[in-house]
Image (cartoon, rainbow, N blue to C red):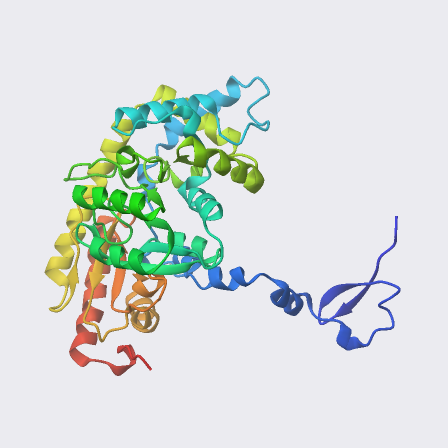
Length: 439
């Protein structure tokens, strides 16, 4: 075996070959500095998304309305433990073995049957299990987007989707959100002026606004897809979190030309730590996605698929969803009551009927990102997601996303009170440090 010689330069170990021994010291760079220059440009774009900051905060006393987390108490821990124990008890040697890229067949069959009964006809052969819906977003981006390709996103939209899309360097086209979904007139203007390959939408209880796309807009979006030849990525992790509304048909169920790729997830209806979702597409697109999945991670973890499959064999998922919906509806209603009671004049908010989020808007001379850093975190010990992280252009500064599913009722009351006090003080004093400027 060839012996490697090492030297230490700037506290880093450097391998020295015979050819490089006589080079000047300037030849060497610290691994840190060298690595930054050698990394792909996508690393910087993704790092600037703000996604990591949502989940990382060291304040133990912090009341977080930021991360889109389920209620920890909603996880069926005992039932899941029993299911995984049963998997190992009945293991024939296959549980910890490789499987295949499509995912566990019995679980795919259950999901296809469930989706079909819910009104979205689904073939098992066109359904893939993924590591959360997040991986589905990445697979579709890999499938469709080259650098510079046209991508339409709702404005605002899911921060994790933007973090993923950024890596593929698309040309973003923002289409504003309305109470009943994306602005179709604005979308049509974009399509008349630009070549668009992909439209990303969250039609049910949209992240972050909570809006539900109307039936008329769903029909119009599909008609535009057929006319302008683009693919629709329908992301529906919140669809079954319906509290006091009713479900409209999925885009996938209304699609007549195979243009819709739909995503779903167990993260919001079971537990996010499972990292288990699914992707459904027509055969022509599906086969290419399967090949991309195989190259990306080979397969979704077999143990997780086996555990969830066994859970579904021995538990009523619909009953579980009904139980968590009662909890979430109570929290949503309570946060809306607190906002109505506490917020100062000039601040508005959405009133969703499902999902995870409420969308807050303050006077346009207030920068909620700056206010978060300067006062909300250090003084109020409250966090939220500023709008700038939810628009590709990062041009909007006076809006924010509030999560109501994770904090307790007590924390919702305390947190909204703190947030409202600081907003009232900021608006009243018109502190110049929080006023946004287009310099």
